[in-house]
Image 1 (cartoon, helix red, strand yellow):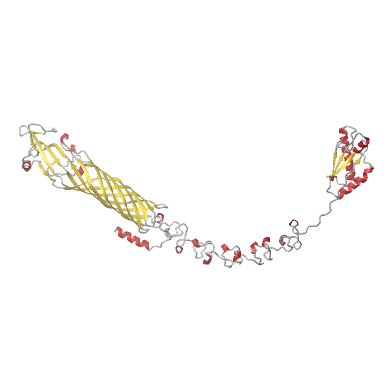
Image 2: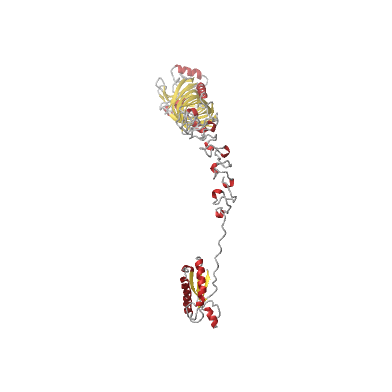
Length: 587
């Protein structure tokens, strides 16, 4: 059935459109799944026996033993059906719930069972009852039902291979043991009476009373078979090798919580079907209350399963897991365009089904992922880009998209045909030179006509391409070497200096940019302070003279040096006369 479902889902998946991915990742698989698993392996059970010895009346503990219960030859086979859901963007993790049924088998054995206790026969006589059983075995068919609540993990590695694992709780709802047994028992008795009519119970571990009557196998070693048969025929509770009246029965345990772990490899037949195979481990603890009146056997022919003396079971199943996983449900569609991500070539952008989920924003019939100009309607030959000027060069490669041009100039024109496209040509309507950005140089002075103020006359760049006129004659230097002399302690210019000062005035007026320093001096007659003031007065007298002749005051600067820098020796009269002077100097 599982194989049929898997093949059917695989056939449906093969009819769906495929994308260019090598395999569909977990994030794009359907979120829901059904897991159908077959489980098989070994069963091991640890059995804890309750203290049932005291359930026999006046039991002689030193002489009694309820024996040791062991489990062996365990096996388990069954199946599991789960509904799972994988969540999140990656869809690696999920949860699952379902139903699991295991049919388990094994043997429970009981060794060294022997009890001695007080009993009463059909004649109401008190006596010691001895019951012995050796190598009691129950062959069990165990019915195990549980509900798995698990966390699920899956990781797809390639087109066909992946890993998956389940781990979680098992809510055990049934653990029922159906058994058949090979049990047989020896029922023996010891009577104690001093007169043959009044009987008492011998409670000693080793009976020693001289009044004891032994109805035991060892006491009647020679004819025990005949003896026991005779006593049993009289209705006494004795017999050797007695089997139960019923050799089958059942025992059940309470519901509990266990866990399972199941790591598996996955082989993907398709995106909808995967085959799983791996290991499983199941742990299931069970408990029950042992009844206060439990006795394995009491009377000839009675039998109560040894499993009813077991108060706790720790069941471990480990083996292999083989199954199929079928994915179903609505596939993820992140952009909500109606095309599942699994088949959507543009899963994060709302698109059109005819373009496998990709958009066409400009509506030119070319999907955006193949459209070099997705926001402008264009032509297929230009991968969706327009050519507004119709020059055969798409706009995105056309440096002049609104003017028809030439391919060698990336779509730009060259009106003057000088080999320089108009967009780079400073003179697009006149043939020119590349070094001048398309402009000519008519006068050949290295300055293009558009920057040349004199395009037909060669000139330097410093004069904007115009010839440089000859420089104006340099202004004539003023001869200021003649001193203006003064008498002793006087500030009156001598008439002999008038002609000289007139010439200085004329030159200064001709050259308005010229500056002269008027420096006054004295001889050494008088104090330094006085001579200093006197030298300044003499300089100012000369300044006023020149100002009256029309010289701008800004062209004259007055300085007084007193007795400093004599022109001649002050030791002679002639030398002192030379030192009483005003000296003019040009700046």
